[in-house]
Image (cartoon, rainbow, N blue to C red):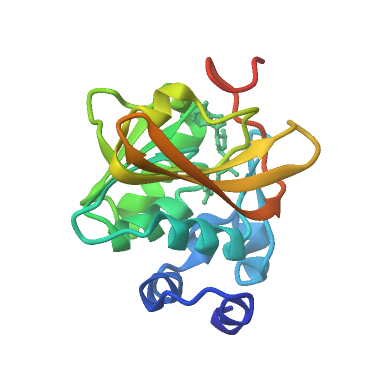
Amino acid sequence: MLSVLRRRGIASEAVLDAMAEVPRELFVPPHLSELAYEDGALPIGDGQTISQPYIVALMTEAADLGPQSRVLEVGTGSGYSTALLSRLAGHVFSVERHDSLAIAARRRLADAGYLDNVSIVVGDGTLGLPEEAPFDAIVVAAAGPRVPEALRVQLAPGGRLVMPVGSASGPQKLNCVVREGENSFRTETLAPVSFVPLIGAQGWQR
Ligand code: SAM
């Protein structure tokens, strides 16, 4: 898988090391384990998916993490990207709206030894976690109509928010928003993507 990621432009050795370290087969359903190292999304239950490894690597690289970084992840899903983020950051707060997925992810992360610097929270991640803000990076693993204002304001100065934005079932763009000043944000588009919808008060309404 690393050769695919390098060929597609992932250059951060720290991200590539984390991708090499975290065993993706622990985070996919057992009957799909032979597909764990293919570069594709896979179903994980509740109509949700574990994201494509290349896109996870691209998002993680764009988050530009360091050992002290405090990270908010929205959309824990299987817990795979949470595990990757935990290898690169100081602490990862990951919010999942489905309690069944959150419980299963917490158990996998504990069994694999990744829970030391991870907190899994059940709730609406479009509202962020104001009590834990500010965050050096926010990574949103589901696509919303726009970047939630609640998340924007929880970014630390210089912080980076990586998130797919677009239609719920049509074209989406992976955006990286950098907080350059109190009220100054710069947005860069990284790639066209296809994500499940971000459902919540500042996402799509169910
Ligand atoms: N990164 C995950 C992984 O490695 O398995 C995959 C995440 S999956 C593509 C998107 C997740 O976002 C789903 O588990 C979905 O339930 C969750 N989600 C959607 N809207 C949410 C919200 N408002 N708050 C928290 N989680 C949400």
